[in-house]
Image 1 (cartoon, rainbow, N blue to C red):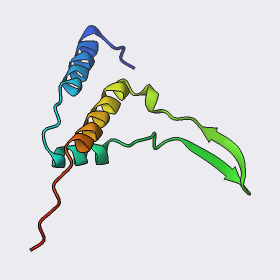
Image 2: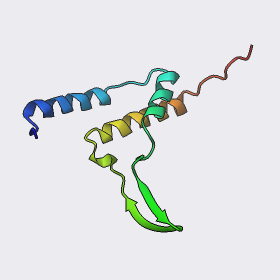
Image 3: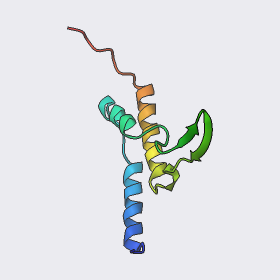
Amino acid sequence: MKRFTINHLNLLAALRQQLESVEIRNHEMAHWICKVIPAQCPFERTIKFFDRPLVHIPPLCKLNPLYDQLVELRFKALVYLADYPESSPVLS
């Protein structure tokens, strides 16, 4: 198994900076971001047997090194959609 080197960390830092610098400019992009980035961790589960919880699997998203940047990007998209409501479509 390879160890992380300075190059890997620099690549991760560059990717974080790129995600933080994304600007939401239109509704299609904002909707796409909200669709692609889930609102809650999809891996969190409670396994039940006859309505009694047996095991709870905690959210694993915090293990993602880009978690904070992705949540921030989704938040930017939601703010854009709230601040600039899409005009109602014209029916023809």
